[in-house]
Length: 272
Image (cartoon, rainbow, N blue to C red; front, side, top):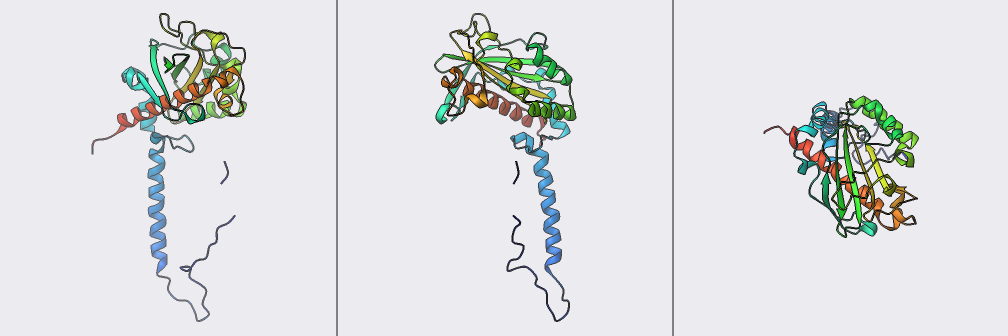
């Protein structure tokens, strides 16, 4: 994203004088303001990832380390809340509510991804994979959300994200995440052939890959799966788009990511 040169003269600008040099009392004040401004900017950058506003993905080392340890120290209800509210997350800005129906045992990544996606994620390593499956209020859609905790450092996560973005790996149908179709639940028939829409995000301020994949709860086969970004467009006509499944995938992934950030924020707060 790129952001004409501003007018650099105003009523306070010192104009040249022909009667010789005279002191400029504003100089010290200007220098002071610049120094204070840089300090404030530095402080804002340090904490920006915790509020989800990081422009370059760089988080503090403490926050990055804390995020990588969450998988074994935080209750599942904090990472995957039993109910997730999605205000304005549905088609046309409609509100959504998702209810958790299954939580997968924490595991490694064997057989958790299609082979090509496993290969693409391999440079980051797999420390632990956490997954949960949700259904919408009508119980007609199911969505699996995953948090892949990697072994990578911040630089490696940055490299992985750059590659995914540059090559469009998060949009390829042969690199879709796999769902968690828990037996005995509404998602029992949610398998690879039922995947309708998906989203995947490589974080750089935490060693985590966040993804979500959605489908119809009736187990129908989907022949035209579509990335959430495309399925959410107003002119999209695929079954995934018409059913709002792109909104389900993106909406849940966004909110689980926010929950992760909130948890890290709490874990790294220091007593005043």
